[in-house]
Length: 192
Image (cartoon, rainbow, N blue to C red; front, side, top):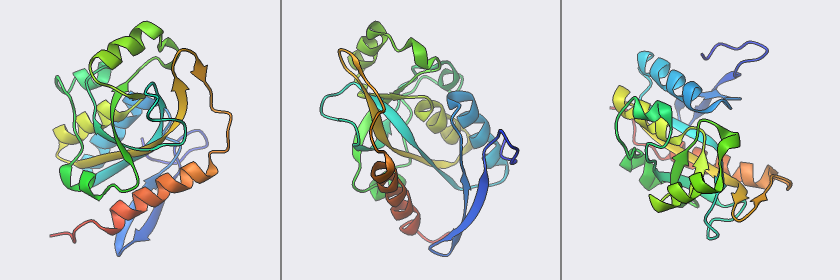
C-alpha cells in the first residue's frame, strides 16, 4: 500500500526535529486506504501517524478554510465499525500539541456522493460538525494496532442548505495545515 507506482501514493522521507518522518502523499481513497496504511505501518513498528486532509463542514461556525483537528470520530462508516463501536479518539498527547486548529467531531462517509440532507441530519444529531472519508477508521485502526494518531486538516467545502463547493484558493489553507503538522512533529517528546 505504500510503494510508489504511477497511480499510487508517493512516499518521501524527511528529517523533522531530528526524527526520520515518512510522508505518504495522494492518499485520497478514504476508509479502506486509511486502515490498510495504518495496519501496514503498525507492522513496520511506526509509533505514531498524522493524518492530513480536508473535510466538509455542516457547522456554520466552521466555515471554509477553518483549520481542524478531529477530537472525536463516531463510527458512521463501514470500516470503523469493524474495529469497535466508537467514538474513536486521537492520542491525547498529540491532540494537546495541535495548535491553530479548531477541535471538531468528524463523521466519516464511505460514499461521498451520498451525503444526503437526511444523512447530514443524522450526523448532526450525534454531535458531528464535519465529514471526511477517513477520520474514524484512521483512529480506530491506530487504536487497535497500538499506534498514536492525530488527524489535522481544513474545511474545504460547506454542506449547509445547499453545497458550497471547493472553488477558492486553497494554497494558504494547505500551508497552514502543513505548519500545524510540522508543529506537532517538532514538539513530540523524544523517543524512549
